[in-house]
Image 1 (cartoon, protein in one colour):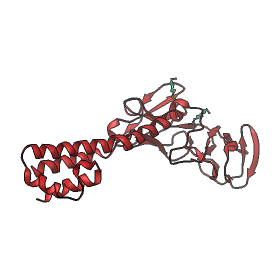
Image 2 (cartoon, helix red, strand yellow; image 1 turned 60 degrees about the vertical axis):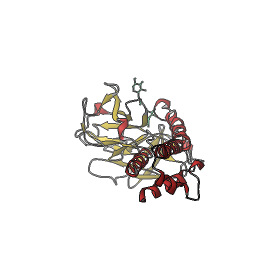
Image 3 (cartoon, helix red, strand yellow; image 1 turned 180 degrees about the vertical axis):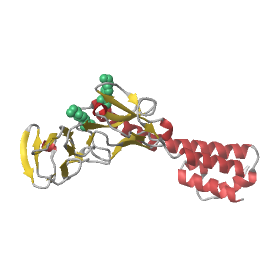
Length: 281
Ligand SMILES: *[C@@H]1O[C@H](CO)[C@@H](O)[C@H](O)[C@H]1NC(C)=O
Ligand SMILES: *[C@@H]1O[C@H](CO)[C@@H](O)[C@H](O)[C@H]1NC(C)=O
């Protein structure tokens, strides 16, 4: 009887790893632009592996195609693409079986001689933004930087840092190395500093991918933690205790009842203490 209770408790504890059903996409190397022929490994960092997250992409040629069957090589948590082709430029995201989506990342593959290395994830207001203009072989040639088509300045070593970014620094950046060439443009987004513990809403014009998903996620998480889990534990433990009593295990029930806190108190910690104590007898 005590062992059954313990097993039930262990089962409950395993349920406590509240699946939150959220994934975030990261990419290695962390650059929004890469040269043709380079390899990349985007990966879905998931909270709940049973949600069946898959990496998908939209390119100019294909829509919502999937890593594994359609392109790339899938291993446990990431997708490896060995030789990126300019036609594989596009937006990449993770999607669960139920259709929940992660943040999305734009990857631009160029057959040209120059790339702009910019952050793949939004930069937080107040942080520094570093952009690097490079060729395949060198990342410290003098380079000119442009935002939304306007020249900003020339940096002698090819790196431009914007200190303490604000929302107005968001835009389409590109760079130029004279006598070599120009990079494709990349969108750099700046997100508001979060006011609370909830993730900041994305400032990207991509309501489908990020903005609408995050409040939903926070709601789910709060719901789950505040309402569902304690309710579940209490109910389950109460049912266990009453079943033990009903089947006549008076000895262990009496041990539980002598504890200072009543099992009826519905205080999770106390109930768990009670069940654990019961196990020792
Ligand atoms: C991918 O393409 C489909 C169809 O055009 C579109 O509905 C969807 O929003 C796109 N996804 C992203 C993340 O851009
Ligand atoms: C991807 O690029 C498009 C076109 O430049 C831009 O509108 C969109 O905001 C970008 N998305 C992300 C996630 O950076």
